[in-house]
Length: 144
Image (cartoon, rainbow, N blue to C red):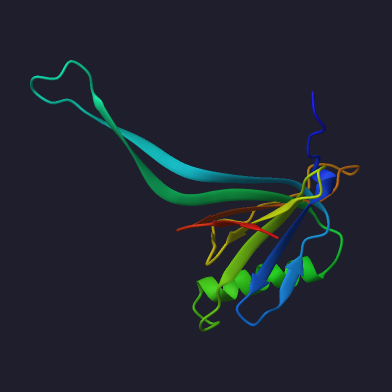
């Protein structure tokens, strides 16, 4: 079996419309899903269903341990955007993946919209965790 990519070979960045990059340094986990639906339709005179695929955008989730106050500033900016107090603010979520053969791919998710942002303080000896769920219309996979 070949060498596989580990989480240590990835980076996650979130960039605002003003070019401000919020590198979430202590990302515990990241997930991106290219949402697709398969449609089935049956027609008279045919013995099987015909299939079509529909692309429904991208969803994702980041789980972050809090390590610096700027994460709270980032959440504040997200909330201000949702309240329409930051005109024209858009967020781009990007990840770079370094492959063992030296190749690199970037997944770029423009105009990400963020949902509820729960903070979890589950115990005295546990790290404070923040979850960021997001969705966007599209994503690009680019050679870097």
